[in-house]
Image 1 (cartoon, rainbow, N blue to C red):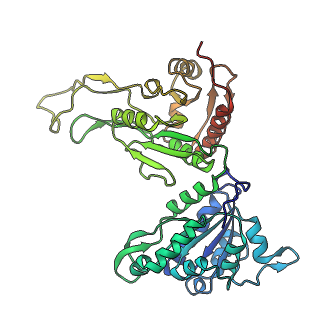
Image 2 (image 1 turned 135 degrees about the horizontal axis):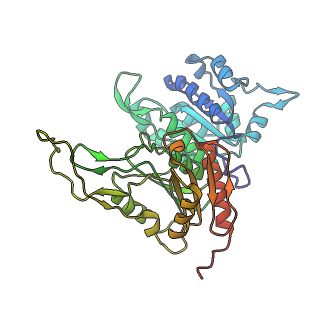
Image 3 (image 1 turned 90 degrees about the vertical axis):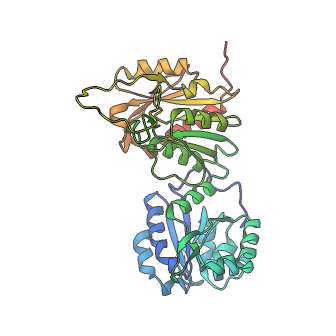
Length: 412
């Protein structure tokens, strides 16, 4: 299971050739959702099932979801079009085993090849991602932990199971990790050797909240979808990512360090600390420009006959302008309602940015798509068509990778 640096890297799940190994635990039914999500993400999925897995779920389910024949025997796939496990192993960009039972983990750790999944794992040079699922005591048994230690030493990535309600009726450790966590680990593994390998990138996402009293705040409609998509695209291209997220981000992505914050000042502190040793800051968060000068200690109540409430606001830190570590490449966003390009160019110059992504605030915030332009200090603007935010994120990361290859601009 060596990690061959010459293999595919940096493309995320789109076009990735994934072998999904399903072993015989009750969590096998969750592998159907995983296969579906992989296909939706643009991956080519080939499923190999153990005999035990077929006791819990039928191959036909995976054939319908992945649109490829399912491999259940070490003798499958030997025809004029392929050489069975040899072809699958050679073409794989990654081998993902979910769920991985204690038995399957033990067989992999001893190099057994008595079924199709074992043969693929022994023959491939693609990275191996293992998502264990089993009973609590089986997970904690020294044999299981020792086998996983050996597999990690061979280069496998292990997505540890979660705690909760188990099939036995007990509660404990051993639940299969969530689909989101498994996909995050897979993106991280596929990014090895990508154009941003060895780079550290800090991304901010979501809106901030500025407290008025213990129950009310000033905020905005930002969902954080753009920032999350950028962070995931950076991971898929090999970067080590720190994501600073505001409270509007409901679900935190995996495969990166996530730092949750509430207010603009908290975000400023987190970004400043995270960027000290970073190569790039991508400030996609919708940060509140102002905050109340004072926060009421109790809930603000309306008084009899009161028709207005006066609030005194003060400016929040300009996070990207005030983050000035030497050599840090800064990418900003300009979501405007009027004079888009002119206002974006003012921000580009005043904040010392290498690039700014400009888009219409009304059309973008809360939407699944965005129509943007890239503006640079010394290059022509790049105007993009309307794109899903994931596709726009990929274009942004491609532009960042290109900027990192250019010599530093003169400050004269």
